[in-house]
Image 1 (cartoon, one colour):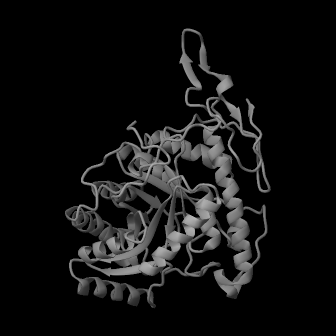
Image 2: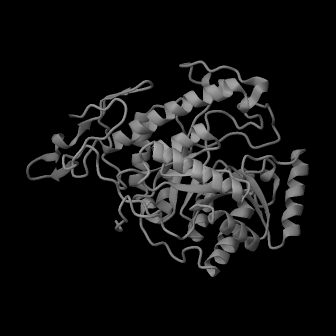
Image 3: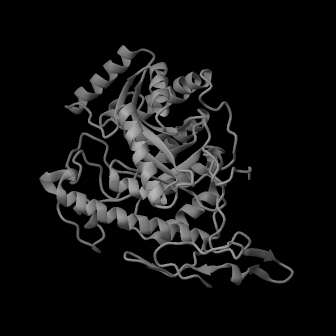
Length: 423
């Protein structure tokens, strides 16, 4: 594994780029475009082609969208529509399938914490880190949708209805779910550390495969979870796979500050970017992580063509097919690779260390990113010309963390529910 800088070292000055893969693309009518290949959406080959294209462009990583209910144009409820893509493959399994077909690009599936168990997730992402030889991460998400809770029958969530995601009830529910997600990630991280790096002896002569003294109970007792541990999967190659999350407001900013390695944010101009970065850094200081690197990536939906008129025409055609203009939480960029490079550099000057681009039509806009935007940024000396590390943490300039349970650590980890004991 390539050496990494120390955990407190400054983040690299070069830009980082990721793409968010969502079915046929982020525009709801993307599946009707000639480049979309809708008949292939539920095949391994479809995803392998997209991830290989991202690696061709030397991108840091891809995120793969997922959920626990059918996609919906409504923010909190099912919509019953049949003219848009509905249905998904499991993001973690897709990442594991394409991992052996790639060598460098990071693989970051989306995981919904609200209705899944942290023990299962820790094992799945640790396995992905082994399968990919150290290129795994996860995008943590919460769900306040009543219909998704009904799939599991273990908790009740209020129907948000007409008030939508910005009403007082929705904000209260989101705050509760995000607090739960903080504990969720803490459990996952501790389970990754529950095996020390040299716990596997594998000594045929003595008949000892593991050293039991190097496996640890995590004994997490918190408001939301009670998990004894240890994991059944050895510590991942990266030690801690990369944890990422999308954050729009102050409460999600706290999730980033307390548990994430990368936060995705949605500024619409330079002033917003500056304010968001400042707010996250303040929350990071308050969480006691001010000395640790935390990347802040700007999210952008992109319609990319060789000239702006073509991009605008394509966006207009897709909006007409959808029956309405496409709305997004993120800024929607419509134009050329050079214009997008200008915008990226403008926003990066306000403290963003990278960007996660959402291709409006995956089959069209992803190649436009890798074959148009990337060469433009390279001409400006703003993006790598070769992969410089073998792991995702290495690409991002993040050190491989020490194991919190290893005896050489001078102090125990802090946080709710910590009682160190040995398995």
